[in-house]
Image (cartoon, rainbow, N blue to C red; front, side, top):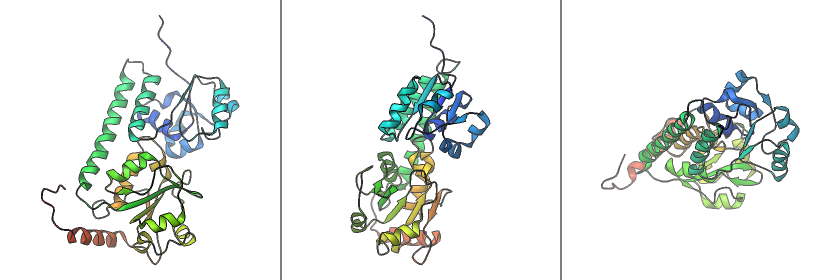
Length: 303
């Protein structure tokens, strides 16, 4: 039986797919991707690939024009866009991760479907990548294991308010926080205000780093919330939390610095609210260290 040919012209309909192809060394097989892929993975400019709509607003004629032998899509979808992807008629791999475990599995699945000239090489690169992600997340988890666990409100959309996805909740916990609410669900301004979150994080889908922190706190009447009064309101680059790929590691470090500024330096991609209630990073560190020092000693505590 002849071997199945490797996909040579791949259409990527989400940045998470393009980032994973880059990590696996497979960008040379990219025939088309979205404008958001270019923003997050500028290396694709060197491939000469065409630009198409993403899996939220996919168009069959754009996909067909790229002459793909494989289309790879991922969340988010609309029913209409799924119909367009199917209408294109090309073989399609549609992913729908919810947890970090799903993200790891999707990376391995992409590697297996794409294959490599050398049998098993692509899958081995994927296994190495997944192991690196797991190790980095566990290292942060160990470092924060004995610290206080601030309550963290994290939203992926601002109107209506939608909580970040389950994999973000896992990252918040690894960063030493407690995730407010049920991941991916709607909430209200009143519910968030009443929860008394210690930290507020906004990472709006498609907004990059452009969430207007000062405006949303004022507009929602959150000036007297614990997080706002202490200047613990942050924007994290959209792609660091909403792209289920290796970029989540950058989101992890941004979350860790927001949740535990006494332990982690402020990395690129994390922006803090400015204005009368804002604290300088050093002030936050001093406050957090003072709070930590006031806690009773715990026998056998870790780092």
